[in-house]
Length: 132
Image (cartoon, rainbow, N blue to C red; front, top):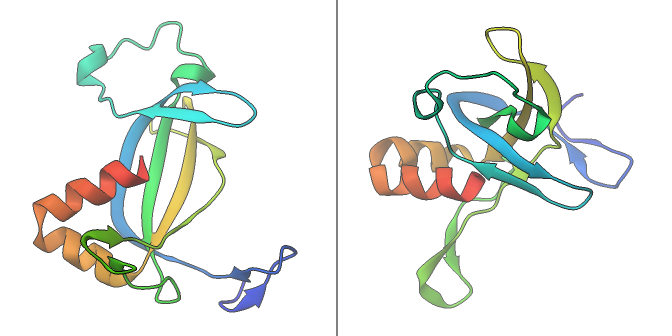
């Protein structure tokens, strides 16, 4: 869809730019209203994929950018709290590099957030923790 187009819900459809940042996590629980993601690497599971189910599926959170997402700033009158506007896509099925079923979602941030992430390790950790 073209940038600025409207969707059926009255929102705006945008085409985000990939940032090259992908957070790899695992799905731990899913029901009709909630999902629980746990940051975990293959090294922590010793590469053991036996018995892997959708409840233990890899989830890839793609950090993307678009200038229509508002810039971050302090929360209304609170000097020590940071407001981080973002847009999150629905989870969609995909495959990992080995061909196993996985899930993916896009998290769209203002481009300045990714610039700040690259400049500040604390900001990087904060954004990754928030997205997960």
